[in-house]
Length: 159
Image (cartoon, rainbow, N blue to C red):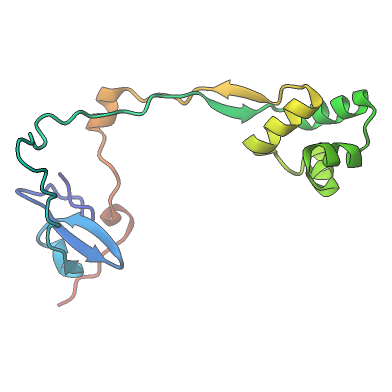
């Protein structure tokens, strides 16, 4: 474990320190910059509990995310015109203001997931495409050290 302030390797148990309303795991040297927090009591699991030995780790699966297509404004306008609707008609149909439709069709606003789904359903078009997040190589991510506050801030030593 490394100190979240200076980045030095912490030997033994890190000190839980409250610095500016943030609780951090620090080394003994950096714990002087805040108020040391005592360890919260562990919940009693009752008789026959196995503690942390039988606990399973759960990982969130890499679900595909959705992204709005590049030329969404053109697709929306053409589909609306094909149905013979005005911008007001489309706005009433999907319960949105006309100004929102204007901003969408001019490209000044990118629809969020909820709005894109309403438009897809109303106009019978496809605005969202699935994209999968790039997965980092596990061995590479384990060896990489995370940035600490000490990497960003120069600490002024008090004499």
